[in-house]
Length: 117
Image (spheres, helix red, strand yellow):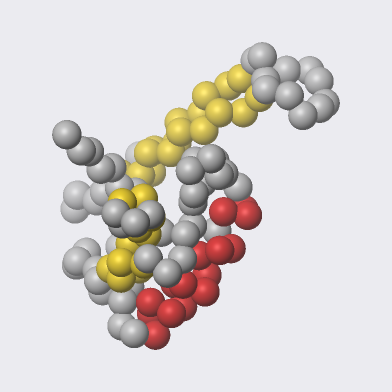
């Protein structure tokens, strides 16, 4: 086994797959939970340095009641144009804000957790 000489962030991805012996569109009654852990290096060309975020209020990527909480290919396409626009004015990523109060929803390629009291 090879060990890394410098500390790197650890990406932890959890996903569940239905395993029941049926074909159809219904919630599964059996499932397997998978956990993938992988050290990751710098995602952006700047390396491990802060990135600039554009607070996107003109577009919505995931709406309440939508599919944003699920990993679907269709969830990523709506973010392409806003990402290109943010990059064209010098930002690395979009900080997605929603509603009249501009509530924080997500940052496209980053995993974030927000809490309010």
